[in-house]
Length: 234
Image 1 (spheres, rainbow, N blue to C red):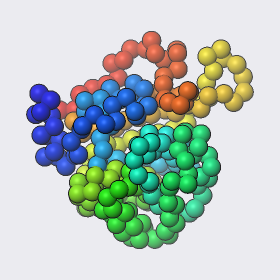
Image 2: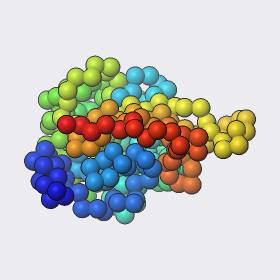
Image 3: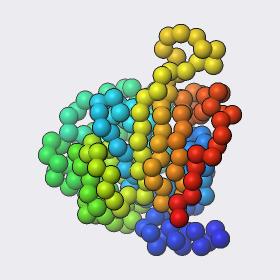
Image 4: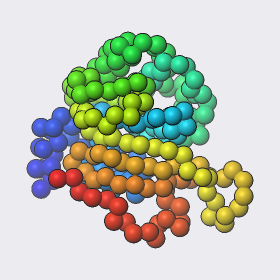
């Protein structure tokens, strides 16, 4: 069955899962939604951001993932149209900003070109871009690029239209109230509401996650909740 899943993933354009990230991607219970419980590499992952607040929450979430992807691998590229990122803040999530090439590109067509070009560069860990919209043709071109290079792509898009794309996964991230186990007031541990709307070969689900001890985990009060939020994709 494991070999069959690998073959199906290969036919769908996903890089074969070799276990390199097993235990390294600190996404807590979300890992159970991935094929073989391992985050898909060499694939395009789509992130829906419809406001400045969700964009900021998504940026932090992706930064944490990049910190794990780049731990023993090459640098990454982050393409943005506005240059509003605050790179020193990435170190909160174990990501060293000096290992990321930040590129500012204004026009949408130039962002698409820049991302496709970077995704073709073997040796990079990942490429992140911020796009107003993402249609099937663009996503397919990006997916074809990563199938050759093995680089992982993250597309943050602002268009609310949930039309089909060739991306392996689709996420929606928003900020949640900060958390402390003893319910102390004030700013404590950062939290996210995480929705995995699509995962090819895996499961969908919703979680509330907090960042603690260098990784994502569920708040104590949520760990006893019914874990039936996951459903298999046929």
